[in-house]
Length: 92
Image (tube, rainbow, N blue to C red; front, side):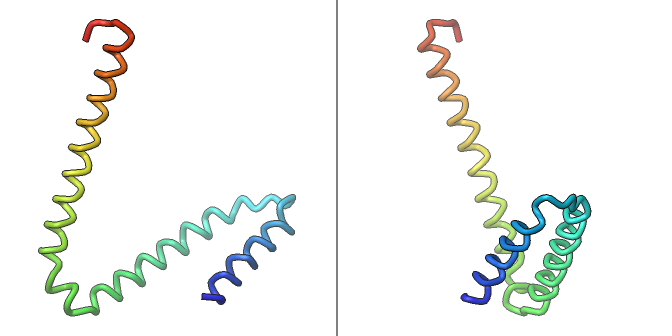
């Protein structure tokens, strides 16, 4: 844990020292590193037999959670719009 915090503060310190430099290439480096991390995560997940065997169940649960979140967000957004619009005295 201290290693992670140390690396984070090291990055903050380096960013502070180079804040006046134009580091336009850093975004591309970060993007490549994120892709590498995702690839390595995929290798780790693919190598775990329990996760691969339960992938259909995990996918179904993830779909159900996502669908519920989207439907709930739409319903609450509509309710808020209806409440605010009605409060102003406008026709709905």
